Amino acid sequence: MQFLHSSDWQIGMKAESVGRTAERVREERLEAAKRVVQAARDNGAEMVFLSGDVFEDNAVDRLLVRKVGEILRAFPGPVYIIPGNHDPLVPGSVWEHSVWKDAANITVLSKSEPVELDQCILFPCPLHEKYSTKNPTAWIDAKNVTKPAIGLAHGNVEGIPNGEPDYPIPRDAANRLGLDYLALGHWHSFARYDTGDGVCRMAYAGTHETTKFGERDSGNVVVVEIAHHGTPPKLTPVKTGRLDWRTVERTVDQPQSLEAVIEELGRLDPPDATLVRVIIGGVLFPEDRHALVRIEELLASRFLFGSLDTSALIPAPDGEGWIESLASGSFREAAVKLRSQAAQSANPAERAVATHALLQLFELYERSRA
Image 1 (cartoon, helix red, strand yellow):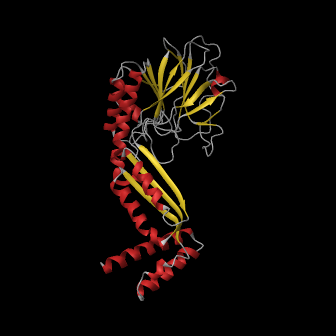
Image 2: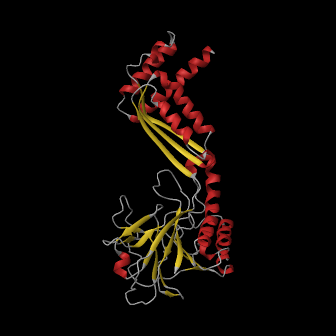
Image 3: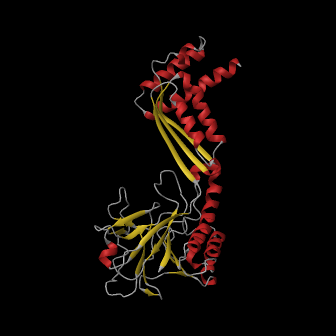
């Protein structure tokens, strides 16, 4: 049998961190859902499994629910879904929408009990509340089945760094429970959990479209092939995400160091689908002020979204260009105070504000002379 595993679509997410670009980010999540269906077709998947958090929450616009249902309805085979912790099965949830009854190929699995299909036996673990310290897979016993045994679960595999304590799932759950494959949801990056002999029987597919900066390997689905019960699954990640979330983080300590950042930004492609976060720390020399402005302009004009974080950047304390280029008077006096505060304050937030104010002061000074 061959199927497609996906999860964590988070349809309806606000994406407020990217400002006016949020609407495009939300639209791409729906377009990526269409690419999931196409990936299932292209790779010969007989069915699609969604392991929770299809929606951001149960309060999303019901038109979005209808749209997702219609997208999944276009797949020629069956689609099986479990509710996750973002969209748990509670009164008034998205799963009460009529689209799930209208689409004959879609089944929302609402009970933790085996479901026997022609090709396999499903062991779904739907969630009924947002938080729980219970292992959602604890009820599964697939040791005596004769067909491929597939589990669908949503939670935290034990041992994940900074993982939340809710819905814990043992790292050896698939082997312990007798499953041929445990399709996981909750974490947004693709992650395999191989046994000592190199066989992978459980994995996070990750979100189908990256949701934010810092996600390691997101924007994928997984095509899984199982010859028969007991044989190792073959996992093939397939890219479905289109947006590219890039973080460029640099520490500068020499004059003209920012030129390398400008060159790197110029190489990023495609700019119309790229969101860029630039983080610069270290020491800013007076002659690099204009390079910093160029970086800001590139981020604002070239990319779908751009942000610049200079909170860890301070003016070079021995860079006399901060003072010498200013005429005597209020501008120079203010610059002396700001440079001192930016270099000597023990409070990082104060240093950041002082650095930003110093740069703005030079901009105002140059404008006054134009």
